[in-house]
Image (cartoon, rainbow, N blue to C red; front, top):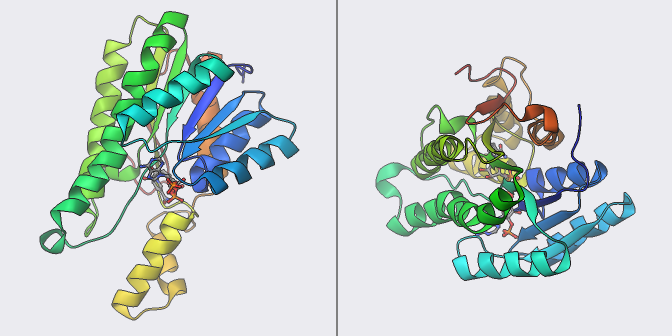
Length: 259
Ligand code: NAP
């Protein structure tokens, strides 16, 4: 797989979980990586890990729901490193709530982070990417961008919208040298999954192991996905040889969803 080392990658939500794995994987392949999120200490930890690998990382705080912060982020990156050519929209949240009990503010917050955050980053970082003639936008969606599960209606609807945006942008970017794709993980072994499992365990009176067992059994492989598996696919989509892959939504879920 031909890689594109040297090109600057930006990972939103890069301080933990899938974002952390993405940052480490791209840095290991020789891409300078900007890790961003709202918790500076987590970003600094990931940057230190990248440093130990011999890579280069810039940990910059940014709330993707605030457009001025995204614009300020772009200005700092351009002054310190250059043009972002690999944008990975990974920041996200997946709180569980029954539809009729869900507060409006929860619905709004989920859409702000998962969809509007992705929109702001695309809006702010695409112009320079297009001007450079080469770019990769990788949206970390979810299998719930294609199918639905109970008690996560805001998450399901927002990730369906992320997939719609991915496809629309892929069409619009067709002749620019920029590809736009989505990765759709199933249950990944991260804090997000563990916290949801803990909440389900409390609500149902079952043990954490039983709930994690339920999550695993949604996949024919009967296991959770390792965040590194998501990162490996992102590396492939960001490679030179993936220039013909755009507008796609690729599942990494052990075969749980086959659409
Ligand atoms: P996670 O461990 O909860 O990490 C989420 C990351 O997003 C954190 O680094 C968080 O950092 C950041 N974030 C949240 N709100 C933000 C905001 N407003 N601005 C900037 N950063 C923000 O979750 P994960 O499991 O790694 O998930 C990463 C992505 O994969 C999400 O989009 C999620 O929907 C998707 N996904 C996860 C799974 C799974 O099973 N875990 C499955 C399918 C898809 P701060 O809180 O410090 O800002």
